[in-house]
Each structure stands twice: as structure tokens, then as C-alpha cells.
Image (cartoon, rainbow, N blue to C red; front, side):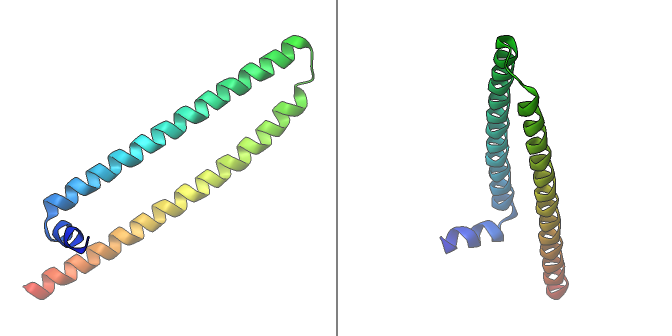
Length: 106
């Protein structure tokens, strides 16, 4: 395992390939999550339409779903911002390390 990590960090081509593969995996995961959310939303819309068609009260359901959606939206936005800040900080640290190594070698 250590040999793999050392070879990937030593060779920028391997590192680039690993980053691209990681991005493809993350993209696929996000794509599946979005599909799941869309299917769940479609089922919910059909359920509300059924309730409306049968004459049941849908006001309470739509209000509670709106509140929940706003909470999730805020949570996802905060989490995305934290991840973005963390990634930027890590990239800056790595760039500073590489720059220091280059300056030491020259």
C-alpha cells in the first residue's frame, strides 16, 4: 500500500490519473443521489396529487415539506461551503509544500 502511495506521489502522471478516477467516482455518486432525489420527489408529487384528487387536506403536508426542504437546503449549502473551504486550504498547503521543495532543490 505504501509503495502505491509513494509511486503515485512521485509520478505526476499517476497522480493525475488517480485524481481523474476519483472525480469520476464522485460524479457518479452525485448523479445517483440526484436521481434518487428526483424519484422521491416524483413519488411525493404523485401522492399529493392523489390526496388532492380524493379530497383530503394537502395544506399541512405541503407546509411541512416546504419547511423540511428549506432546512435541508441550508444544511447542504453549509456543508458544500465547508467542503470547498477545506479543499482550498488543502490545495494551498500542498502548493506551499511543493514550492518549498522546489526552492530547496534549486
